[in-house]
Length: 336
Image (cartoon, rainbow, N blue to C red; front, side, top):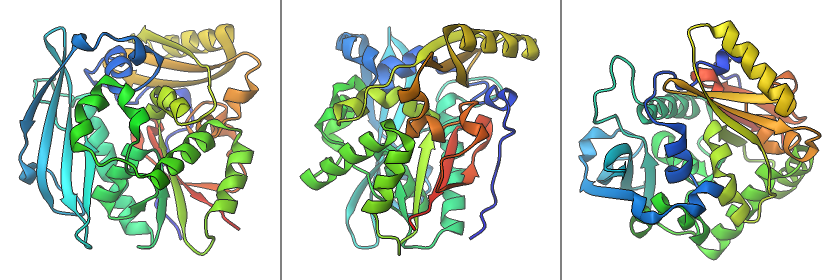
């Protein structure tokens, strides 16, 4: 099967385009939305959540929406970001949930918000999935990505429900009552996926090939936000990974920014890095010096780190990559 592969230019300049113009601060995302180490230390009273019912007609997907929960996250009495939780049923009348990224409710100028950009990317990826994969395709991803895959494309996701470990995060804790929770079997699948993403890529892919039936097409979807979910993955049994991380302001001189980022990556680590742009800042991720564990992990090998772009692991084929610096990538897994 030939997909229309949307390849980013495999250079740093492509990475610098990621989520350009978004207004959501990286620090807000890391501490509030995602479950990394910092979110464990947060005083939960710092985060306020305003709940309301959304309009199902505002959301379009592969399935019809029954209802929408709208969660507006506030920090220091200011809106930080919002999440939507869609309630829907599949063709077998089974209940499902899907966490979605809404349009910004605030004026953000001529560029969309970071959450809106994410949703736009997801809609484009889902359209490509539904147009280019058989209906019996199985999509591997982290659990909330699996929700979006199923709701937007109609394809089955191996993971789509969180376990109790997810609710260490203050944001997920606020959504807990309306999410469908993983069964014991699904909890084991969360543990396997956490292990695979954080372990050596060759070993992870060998386990995946052994685990899944080769008669069924299997794809693996990743996105850059997974780097801010590592704490959650550790709680599910994943390997602890350590990254250098820094937020720096963007300037008008792109080439100057590139030089400074490369200098940081080489001084603080082994020169392997990923750049994500949020608003007027770049968020940098780098693998540390002598970092065999991090650099060879499946998550790093499949995300657009500069060294990962040079050669993919054996047995995976990049079939789709979004714009904005390759924020979202889909790989076909060779199970033979």
